[in-house]
Image (cartoon, rainbow, N blue to C red; front, side, top):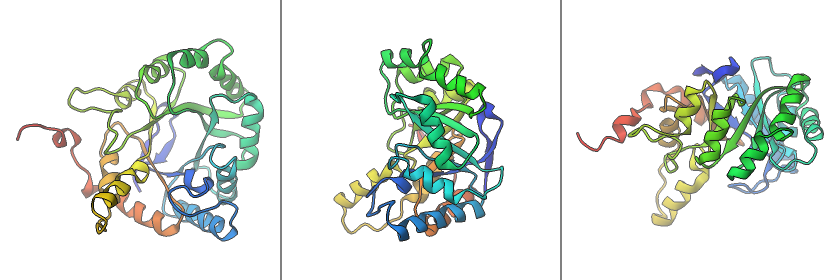
Length: 284
């Protein structure tokens, strides 16, 4: 397993991260329910297999199944070592921040949360200002960090808009989780170069990608174009993201031990990495 330092957190983490959305969301990408005992046990076995194979970065959220994903992670990682890094989130509109954090601590069976990320897909300038302002969500999270309930703070975004750069420029976040994959490359444009991944790295932040495998979008599109296509696009998609020097952790949602083993094998194949700048070159 390849490891890296997650920005200014100073923590050593695996570059392949275990995404928790599929663990908590009913019928997300496949037929599944977190209340189905056998399926839940299958996810727990997948998490345990991930730990055994060296994955140390686990990402979840209370919004993934009303706490179901956090509860599954808490059970599966209850006896894991100190090297395990568990990231969760808090809704950007959470009315009671302390209660939300305490609920996550309970579900995850932890005394301190390694990373709490403001959970958002897109932020308007006004919303960003509210989050960063006096008494805003970030200030409340910082107070809980001072109390020792939280170790590090971050945010998530599917956009690469001005609000993201406001957050980076504030210097108050340790980690950024951003949408970045072969289809959505707005977070890093190597020909300029430009993007939030580059700026976050310059700011000393850790960087994590969501939708690394396009959340099934590419695969569904290919099946519509060519219903007989059976090619496994996972190696190309995962290696593309891991090849970016400004990406610390590439999250992949997994539910089975077989998926874990397949993705770990890809991540361990350093020969599959590419030169992203060369890929974008217009002349040979």
